[in-house]
Amino acid sequence: SIGKKEIKNSIKWSILGTVGLYFNIIMAILLIIIFQESWKNFYINDIGVKNILGNVLPYFLLSIFFLAVYQGLRAILNIIGKQRIVLIINVFGFYLLMIPLSYFSVSFGFKLNGLWASMLISLGFIGLSYLILLFNIDWEANIHETISKLEAIQNIKNENYSNEFEME
Image 1 (cartoon, rainbow, N blue to C red):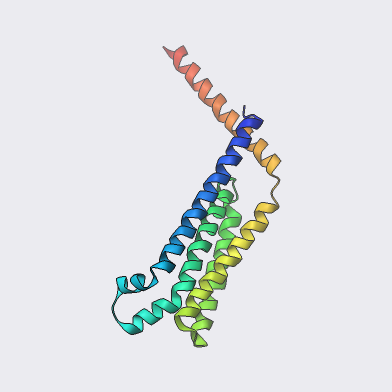
Image 2 (spheres, helix red, strand yellow; image 1 turned 120 degrees about the vertical axis):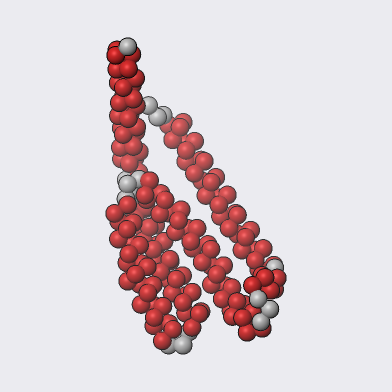
């Protein structure tokens, strides 16, 4: 059975992994900002395109951060068995929020900036929804349910292992 020490260790490693992930993301963002001109030149030498890339850079950098948060929170929810609500939130956020926002932003002349802003708004909505969901989970009950499932799996493996010896 899983004891308090193992639970504390898993929490510690989860936190360290999350901190490491965000440290890497922040470092990537800083490198892109530092080498902004080189980043633009990497794609094309056209001045018009460079200006577009320069205007979109803040949205791009924010999207890196938002996507990391989105993926991390989604993974946690999927692991604890909340796939259905994750699907509903994703469908609403991406299809019912982002697509109409993108359409209206382009219609009102915001062009590429509007498309990126629409993505950020929808990712922000999804991330906030995930956070609200995660803060309302009974973690103690979830831990005990997971432990019960793991013990049941272990019992099945033990039964199968002993059955193999009985057959021989």
